[in-house]
Amino acid sequence: MSLQNTISYADFPSVTQYRFDSGDSGGNIHSLIDIVLSLIRRFGDTFSLFEGTTGGMLSHFFSQHREIISLGSGGIIAHSPSIYVDILGIPETLLNNFGVASKEIASISAQRISDLTGSRYAISNVGNAGPSTAAGLGKVGIIWLGFRTPHRTVVQCVDFSHCAGQRDLLCEKVCYASAKIFAQILFADGQN
Image (cartoon, rainbow, N blue to C red):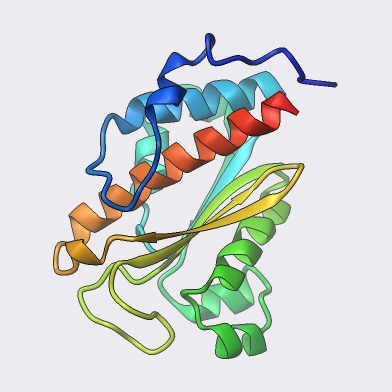
């Protein structure tokens, strides 16, 4: 099915208001999630989540929307590198070479969670939300976001290091950025 000319900014005027930058202080995440879910519903698909950073917070925000029942395929919350290896099937050599908090692992995580759940859309986040730096996690506040669609996998780095020491705030910002960037990606894909 061609989606060309079926989705316009008129359908989702708030998309034009969201231009992400690392200084973004947040906003109405629920409006962004409504946009994401509406676009996925229009595409006739489902999505999944992999949270290596936000500890279930992104799933929590999505689960507050009733459409999640028909659109959400599932997700994984990972606090241990063994989840990446044993559940997602990411080779340990990749984790050793790039570290858990890397663009490569964000990309692979989005692809693998999508494959595991049978969804064609996925969001992943990997990085260090603090409170301290650990091996393979990198600097606190540097988070890699992975987005999978049937057309492409996109990886975006967000820098919330100014929130170091404020884990809840940092995770909220990661969730907001995830929803915002995914809405932009979905909208762009709908135009092609």
